[in-house]
Image 1 (cartoon, rainbow, N blue to C red):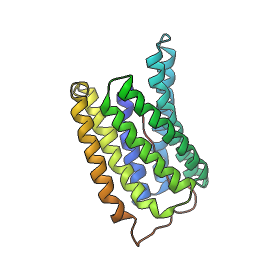
Image 2 (image 1 turned 135 degrees about the vertical axis):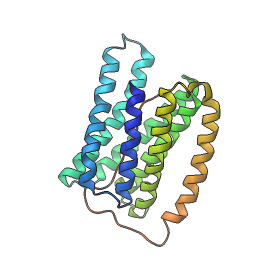
Image 3 (image 1 turned 45 degrees about the vertical axis):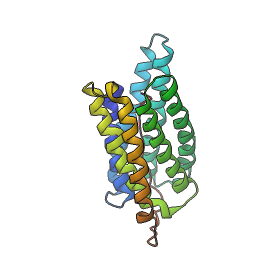
Image 4 (image 1 turned 30 degrees about the horizontal axis):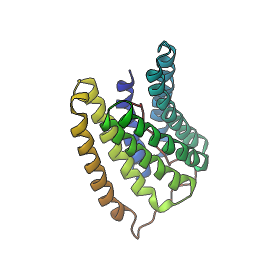
Length: 215
């Protein structure tokens, strides 16, 4: 169930990335944030109620709420014209939790590939915090590009691999590929998108994004 949600998490990350890059209007992105946000709240609630007290299932479901609330927060910001400061500081909390979930995947769940994916998300939500919470608007385009890339790399691709049964047999190789890809691509994008051209984010809605399950 969570694997299906991961596919749509990829979609909303990609869309929000395009929004930060100025390709999509903030209000136009709100409906998908609502749809995926609601999905990412209903899914963990269902998983917890049907877990029968299984600690690992409950632990895995807990991560979904972080992102479901992020998407809904994004939608409220866009539709109500709120500034992004509240979402920015909430993103700091999400980034810190993502580091914990990353460690759990490495140590408890023996899934280094998702351990790296959670590091991706910690990095992205850390960027949201700096952009929205600290008001560093010079990171707008870079954050948008990182979100769009992560929509594919941490959402769509893992979802299809999980749904087709090709994730678990390849977790070590995937972890290495993801780590190298992230370091190279995000490193190359930084100087290209944070140079002299500094774009200010429109006041209010159009700044954000979000991500999904613990494993």
